[in-house]
Image (tube, rainbow, N blue to C red; front, side):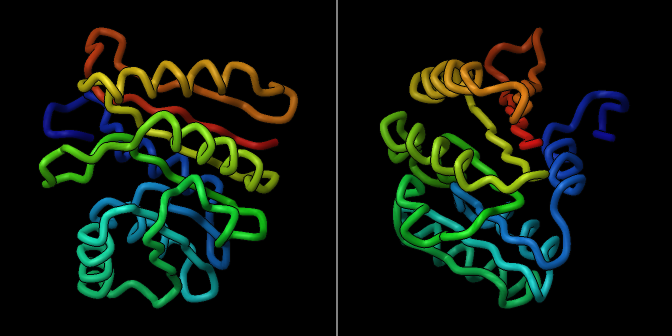
Length: 189
């Protein structure tokens, strides 16, 4: 519960969805590393025998994440990759149980570098292809800036084309707050 009582905490909700699918020994991908908060969550969830691949195009993100993971006492079960998430298949060969995307910009940065539609779309398509049966993808969208809004529409249009007999695509959104973040839950049957 949030400090406001009954309001939905979107981050907590995302973690609940992930925990329904991801466990000890699994493989996960943080497609948008940022400062590594999702990487940390995934690392602790998959434990010593699992592995997390995390991507970012900014060296600052890798340095910040490495520092945060050490401080948090995460097991050394992660690979931090300085590359665009759309190149995921160069690094991740087998199926994944979970993947997380936080589209937008690096928290605490000058916001000049954001995820972009031309790399986000191939990254999400690759993530869906890599997703194992019983696996989950979470895609958080931040529509408060122009590129984020456009990304959200593009991603929704793509998810609407997926075969509902193989993949369940759910949208979680606060409908009376159009610029608030929202997310998609993609579950492979």
